[in-house]
Image (cartoon, rainbow, N blue to C red; front, side, top):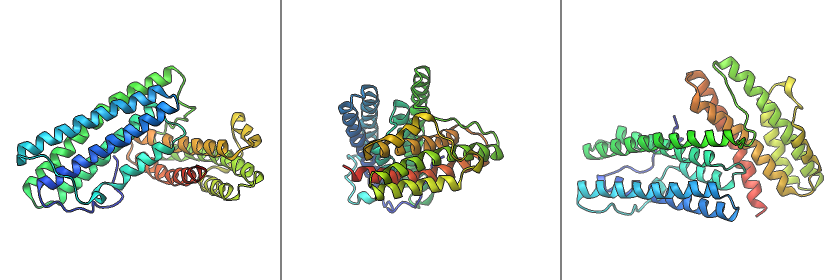
Length: 307
C-alpha cells in the first residue's frame, strides 16, 4: 500500500473545494502523461508513447466523472483550486522519476499510473478520516473508492504488459526477488545490493578518469550506500556487459547506465512489495525501495545537469 510521506496541507471547507482539487489532480496527471507520450514519440518508443496516450484519455474520463459528481451535488462545475500546493508531492515525484527514467517500458509506465492511483486513494482516505463535514467526508470516500477502482483496472493492464514483455524477453534484465520470509529477503537483497555497488563503483572510477569529479562523487556515494546494505561475499561481482563501461569515453552513457542500475534495484523492491503477502517482507521491501529512491534522485539530478 502506497503511503503519504506528509499530511495533506489543505483543510477542505466544502465539497466544491475538494472536487476542485480532485479535478486539478486528474488534469495535472493528463498533462504529465501527455508530455511523456510526446517525449517517447521523439525517442521512437511508439509502444510506450501509446501507453501514455491511453492514460491521457483515461484521465480525461476521470475529469468528466468528477465534473458529473460536482453537478449532481452542487449544481455547478468544480472550481479551479486557489492553492495547487495541496496536490500530494509524492505524485509529482513519481512523474519526475519517469521523465528521468532510463528503463521506461509499458509495464513501468503503467506501474507509475498504479502508484499514483494508490497515492490518491491514501490522500482521499486521509481527508475522509480527518473531516468533520459529512458531505466532504462522503465525497472523499467516493473519490478514494474511484481511485481504488482505477488502480485495479490499471493493475490488470500492467499484468498484460508484463506478460507481453516477458514473452519478448524485454524486461531489461530486471532481477527478481522471490522472498517468502524476512531472512530470505535479507539474503537476496544483500546479493543484489552488492552487485549494484560493484557496477556503480566501476562507473564512479571511470567518471573520475574522465575528470568528472562531481558526477564521480555522486555515483561513489550511491555505491557506498549499496555496499553498506550488501553482502561482503558478493562484493565485486558484476556482469561482463556492464564491466565494459570501464572503457566508456563520455560521461552521459556512464550516468545513464548508473541510473539504469539504480532503477533495476528500485523496481525490483517495488515488484516484490506488489506481490508479497508477508507483512514483514512487505515492510522491508518498502523500506528498501525508499532507500534506493534516494539514489535514483541523486543520479537523475546529476544527469539532468548535463542537459
